[in-house]
Image (cartoon, rainbow, N blue to C red; front, side, top):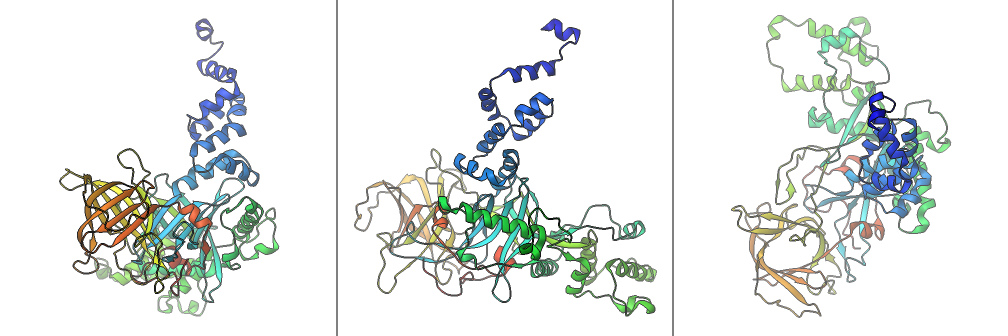
Length: 579
């Protein structure tokens, strides 16, 4: 072998390829489990023989399994709707895995919880409606939810974004858009407007005068009023009416749903390609017009920035201006200013239109976009500190239980004991969702178990969103006895702690002593020592709850994504609803 290498008859790279090719297919499949998709692609580029081995369906099915977001049976079932497992792996790894989880926003204070879960060759964002549960308890309740967005996997593995919402006539609509990037460790989901360039708008001299450097002004740098107005312009223009979604299937609930879900996916792919004319087209047809976008000139008009005739030549005053002509006349006006104004700082009103012009200058149309980014965020007791002027959702760092952190995760429950017991005057109980997480105390001497409220199903918010319902000293056992009949439960552990109570106004609650009891069946009960009030919790699988739940109509599109207005009431339902 050394002699062969010395003589150049067989290079080291070719020799390594021969070794790989000599291995049985089953062994190569096992090796593929420990190799990243990027490495698989690089190996397939080495030579034709390696390409045939590592570009096979079997190897990419293994890569799909490694992503660990779907079961093997689901992946095999979904294969019929996509070109290859390689394309499917792209969607699973770049879209589904980073997005699946619980996303929240600070407003309203009752809770704004969006659970992102797998659909059918798609990812679906579902909002849990603040609500009550009946006497059957959480597991048997038909939890109400409303759709927020869908990301559909195209035939080639590409991602197609749709925002759900309803129009002014209360008709459900879908708003097609673009997925502009999803970081693998994303913690913020942003709804934005993206400029699209289909033709050259500005000459080279205009670009120089604008001071452009080839980098677009980010949408987030625009003042809030312009961001809000641009989103409203796009959603009101590109929205496509659809039937009432309460009877639609967005994710599988049984084995018989495949045909219905496949039809729904085909409908959305046609909507994304053809816009409002989708119903008369086939996916194989060519798209003549550019759908799902808004012309820049129309955007200026809707924003209230019609051409200022005082700044234009007299001969052009009555003529409707394109963006480029509007820009040229504006440059003339700028260059005609007296030199004494050059050193004068621009007022806020001057800066805003200029920033808007810099943003819109990068395209001839605008469309809806979804971006998932990783942003450095501070947090308090596991709850992220949010920018409440951005249409954004924030991912909760919900952890799976591990050794010494066995209570971590998502829990749900109601007040009262026994669980689910209702009275004639109160046939339902408010549903609470809590994130349980572990932290060290400020002095670093104790471990704390913190139950952070992320949703409450009351008429009016009693607890701040993201506040701690209780804080437990997990290494400090309690010797308090459970104050009620055990209802057949065996208590395994009890821990001392404090639970939320009235404090200095709504935003700054106080805390009173209490005890956390743990049963052999996995229930948690926090009991306030003074009042004997009981909060009973159990682990939840939101995916299963949603599959058995009831779909209700969404809010208008932008509010449906992120409700930015301060509110202490249930804005997601017109009246008190019970599951």
